[in-house]
View 1: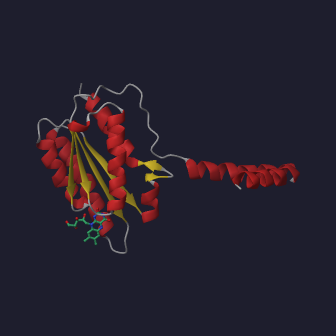
View 2 (view 1 turned 90 degrees about the horizontal axis):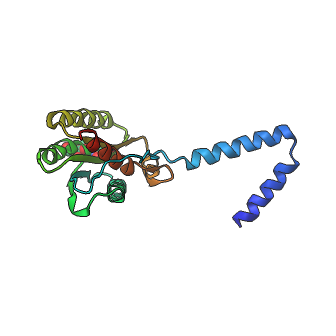
View 3 (view 1 turned 30 degrees about the vertical axis):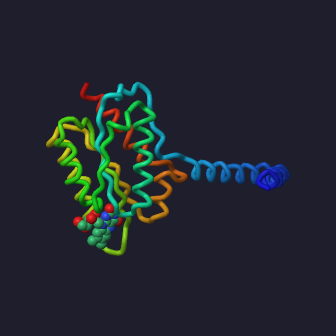
Length: 191
Ligand code: RBF
């Protein structure tokens, strides 16, 4: 079916004038690019050896269907690049606001080399979005500096649930993958 449609579109484009053809191709190309660009593409060259490194992961339960996918992406990417399952400590907190305290508890543990905070804050009708997003972003910076340890901001802040789905294993990639790579690179930074 899909092949038949592509075939018909090709024939129609062939019979268009050059100007119209270029116009059509421009839009097809633009749409293809828009719909397939993976926002979580990352450079995985020269990553440090993380086979003995311990990672703490804190996940918010709010918007669970999204944060579970972020967690999956984070774990898959850490393991893909050499982390051991037994060296991953996963903890949940009720909402993104609690990620700061949850991350603090994990960052305090001397055996944990990096912490990854995962959450999803979706814009609603009230101003909670701004307050929570700002509190988490600023709070996590504080934890980074206080414990002199990487604490990665893996929190989606989107206008809609659809945008969050696209970025948590949907058509725009998985921000959990990106959070994992950031943690790996920052662990290597201090060596
Ligand atoms: N937590 C999230 O992780 N994502 C949200 O989108 C979110 N929306 C909230 C909206 C309102 C109005 C409130 C009161 C809380 C929301 N929370 C959300 C929960 C918040 O992070 C925290 O768990 C609670 O405020 C308790 O401290």
